Length: 400
Image 1: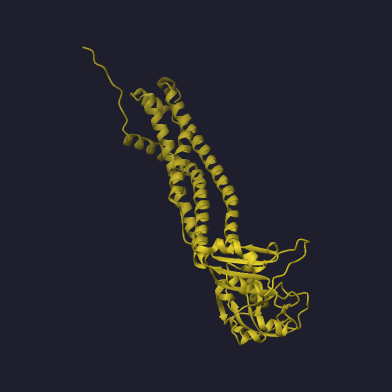
Image 2: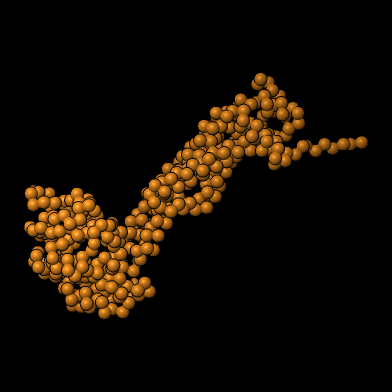
């Protein structure tokens, strides 16, 4: 009577138990090897998470401020000279269909700003002085941090509103509203301080006086430096196409038209290259971690030759040995990858909260990180597993 014997089969749970036993026997080495994988995954999670959180903050900011703000200013003539924009452009642009609000500022290049009249002229702090229309605040979505904005009365008198950075450089806080400053060779009273203006950052380092006040006290001629146009969101492109020829019908080529929100988006897009660089560094760290896993598994095979021989002599097949060591490598990589995902998420959440951003960690990042971990772990454990499986029982036992 012939009896055929079939080799025993290892169930998935048995493979996990064997792999866990092999790792528990060398805890310090396992921790150090898993740390290499964890650093690589944590770096990738943190880089992508911080980048997407930053973009979420940008989208939220643009949603609040609106992307329907256009700006136009005089460019250069065909001879390379500085062009000008006449005050009449405000009314003409206001008649374009889809335009909801138009305002303007005019630079006073000769006017300098100082805390007092005893400061040397060379120490102006780089603060620009602009004559501003009264509807500037609403059009560019700016807010007052302290004091008040110009009104029909104060716009005709020597009153000034400071941008956030301008106030900081002059050492004027909310408690000093009403303080006089030396502007354009005479005293102006500070009536307000702006919050940072995201869409128009040049206002942050500016001193703003009324349009009629500029004409009365600083010889302002009314030429427009920048025109700000708030439009119906659905008409933004049509208004943009008509803006230059409306502001200067005779020479539309001398008008530069831009969209402030595009500048913010472009700044965010510039971070993509930096993000790519950091992801590359994270991938290198992950590769180094994979090499660490491979090194740990090769050494484990050498140290456990007696165990391999004993198991083979008791009936374990080469496939069993191969699965055992391959499972150890995968379990080691998963341990590192899971730790890395947790660490990366904590770093992302902490940094985003510190910056006041919404926390946004895409699920595909965690999935991709785990897939990368399995791939690295599988490749790192493949050779040691095959090497262990090739050991003959007698050869392995003779090494003890």
